[in-house]
Image (cartoon, rainbow, N blue to C red; front, side, top):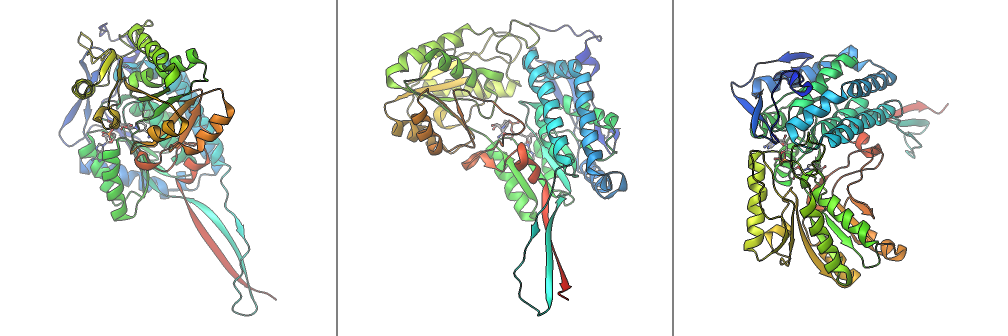
Length: 499
Ligand code: NAD
């Protein structure tokens, strides 16, 4: 499983230990560095710089200057569109290097890095490029009756919100960086992005490619470091107009509170505990595979992971046995090995966290139907785990684990399925597995979630809004909604004499 560390491996050549501020590599930091690991071996592969308040300030000032500077501020929308299209092309041209770098740093399977970080990243860039030239306000008919003899012409103009501070997690590092950068720059904002301390490497390369694509210096800045140091300083910086955060509900709540103190605009994409609801009329084989994919995809390190499985009683034993069989059959190993189906957790700390939930599940009375242990070896592996017979108030049922751990329970009626699915503080995603159109139509409106999938799970598209209700967040990414989140609407009211 271990990787040889020969310098001719493309992912090693792509490692950068600097940040990108104002179009230049920056190697100055707080004095601290943070190690970056290969989670499949536990080896240290890089030392990222930790940006302290001085570097955060430099990055925000650079973004402010770029925002008001003529190179960016006066660029026509078609110019921004062209730069995003250039960046999409460069992303594909460097696809192999970026995908390998992501697999090295995050541990995910190489085909996923190719398909979901690089190819989807390019798709999102191109989609958002199109929005740059399609932004428009409204013309308004006003009814103001005074003063006599005066008429009004009114309209709204959409203006970029300004400097965006974007903070992203480690589960889809390159794609999530693009989910923030693409709509921000399509609308004319500038951005300071802080990747997760576990996975900074592809974001730095992305910022370099953005310069090559022609983005003026300061439009896209990437700073690195720990959340409580670099992230906190970025959120608090008075030069930031909007914070776009993806991460845990706990950190999101802190950031939301702080944003309100300064009235910064804020979008929060937070945690989940998504239900998978399997009705007895479904295609059972499809549903078993679907439930397995919903939780084990990306090792369960997915905000919409289907971590709570509810199966109608008549098919419960069959579905749960099928899921346990899939879980036991999955090949665990390095993301570079084509035979691997389950890669490592992103970090030793995260593996400990997932394992502590598995131990807790046993202590709470759960029956382990598959997995239940870590995986021997140097990397940060956990076996795919299926629990049954846990009480609805068990912590393993209620808290986000963010690993390959699913809890299964049965229900009898649609009302029970809805009550169980909604019995959570989260509301990010949900899936319903059924071939009964009437049931599906009855259930969809009753599920409290930002996205409800039917006979599929975890499918995203740049044109389909994505986000959470309840404690899964505020705001939507993708589609028109994402673009609007980076714009302010200015009303213009022009008085003129009627004659
Ligand atoms: P996290 O909240 O610990 O960290 C996310 C980011 O926030 C990292 O870049 C981190 O450095 C930074 N951060 C941490 N503390 C900070 C602080 N005090 N101030 C500013 N920044 C700070 O989350 P994580 O463990 O990296 O990621 C997993 C979480 O992300 C899960 O809860 C998952 O559900 C969520 N997530 C949500 C979505 C979504 O779209 N809703 C997508 C992916 C992941």
